[in-house]
Length: 631
Ligand code: CUO
Image (cartoon, rainbow, N blue to C red; front, side, top):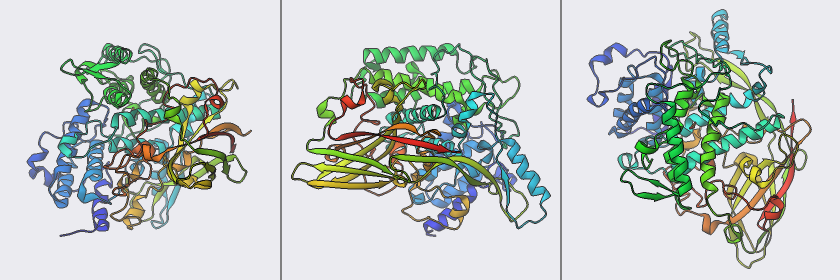
């Protein structure tokens, strides 16, 4: 039977429905289990899956490799149905998602949003109770029910000011999808698809999340975060108010003042040893592989090698020696409340890619990780003129066109999240949660360019933003500014000899996801076709493209740079046209990362000049804009 994309989409959706609930096949399937599924189910139903945990991930890898290897679409579905009832719910959804993204016969099939599969990972348990109560009390089964999302704290905890960012559904969903697109254990030689510059993208995407967090902190009048430094320091507190619907237990709260403890799988000393070995390798400029050979941390490949080693992913050059500092850092932090498991607590939110961004420690941990990468970047020479210039091309004017020129307004908006595909409410009308999130007005960049040559110049347009002032109101110098530079957009443009003028709309940003389709939309075939972008589940939410700013109009640098596209292109970009929607943070499916320059260029290395204005070349422009928040 040959199925078209819409039919496949419809057959895939039920794999994700009611993921926390046992399916009806449960008993029948015990007697019929494909031998390929043998050995799975060690992490059984009701246990929380963490892809940062080596054993969990090994089991998930086994499953996604079996699912990707299924000969036909029918066999794939059959295996999914069989495995569903005896492996951990989270592990199942992870492995099935990885398989759908990578099976050739699932081209064009979209994943439903993770927030609709596991709403319990995205909203406080009180809100879930409210939804259940309303559904119970409302006798009219046809009507939609809407309840409001509850808050998780108040400003007695100053960090609560950032809760709207940390607990944003879109960024947590993005992070979940990113780790599906880039599984740490991806084995290209087995599956046959490369993940270009995966180690470097691990560094860059997380660096950008931290930079964006600090922009948000400054917007709220708060100091930039203090990086995690010492494994023996006390930790801040955090209460997620989440409770897992797969086992009914809360994600435990962490009172202020706790310290990390050894686990049976890994000790603090292991992490410290790995940190020191990585730090030594950065300072001597090479790492050692398993045979003792030196692999240089050079300009061409250094960051990719280091990214893989730090995460640590399958590509790590020597996991036995350098360990897995990043992944175990997540796990050890998540288990701080019950390190030896004596209370049978769930791990905290740090163990799950769909929830970890909620916790303030996430950013501090990742800044600690990022500092390792930055230590390496500091060993590289500064970019010189020939690295930065674009001969004959000059940006003469840049402005932002919105309601007010060179100002972007931000505000709060409401959206709805449908719970009806995760839980059975016994009604035909939907049950939805209304939640608040930051948003911004739509805007255009207007860029005026003079091409002084006699030839058309194809260019890469690179746009960044960063706050002008630090928490004390002092102007940020380039050393600090470059770490706050958030990518806003990157795209190709052609400049003809003479005067040029381009307009680029904010919605087209290469950072953001254009549209994540809901369960309901996918079930109606909306946007489902063989050209749909499978990677489109990955991408920064458009509503958080612009930092909050403040009520007075917070000054930001808007930096635009043009580079020579003929040097930047990698050759195969656009080959298949598949998923080139949010390439900056997510890459492009089955293709090379569509930019030859180091990720974050030109701000990935130190800048010698103290002031940005002294460093600018004609192919760059830095203008001051404001971001004004309206409550
Ligand atoms: Cu994505 Cu630490 O890798 O959160």
